[in-house]
Image (cartoon, rainbow, N blue to C red):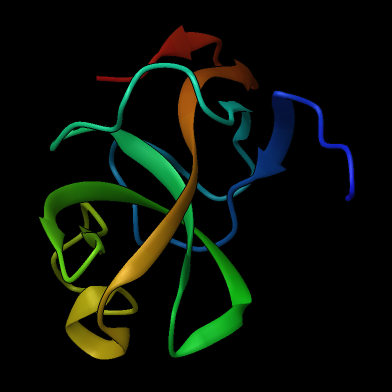
Length: 103
């Protein structure tokens, strides 16, 4: 069994979460903790694209996973294209370059 830290960092790449997040934002993510709720910003992998790690907003539970979408409606690299995703963790804060909590 591989041991994993409960907290890890990710770097946002691309415009899909604008305006809440921008390319280059650094985020602190928590595995486990409280249960994911609709509206949470999460890090996930699509079942159809397990090689792709994404930052998106959880919309609803579906088929044992989550339907996730970016905040930028013009970019559809989310569940509309790839289907259901498995959430790895919930984003706690943006720590660079503009520190702040996400809602």
